[in-house]
Length: 98
Image (cartoon, one colour):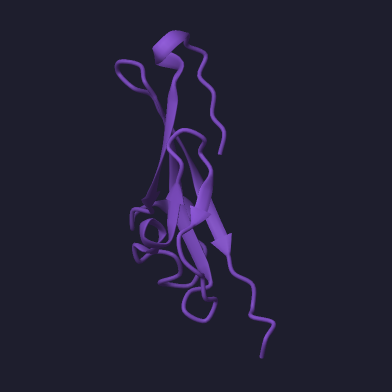
């Protein structure tokens, strides 16, 4: 993810964080019950707080979970801080070695 801030100096600095979707998050609906809504995002993915680059921390297995949905936050250093967010979805492909 890449975010920018129109402020100058320290207030323009943006850091990133990754959270699991809130169960009441309507933006994350549309998948089968239990798909990507069990806290797996913060267990399986990490975001670099400075670059916003998201990477998996472990091997992902389609048979265990096909879809991961996370909330990616961008927060500026202003007072009060401004926060923007995006829904991040990761869809796993089927294992070709059967």
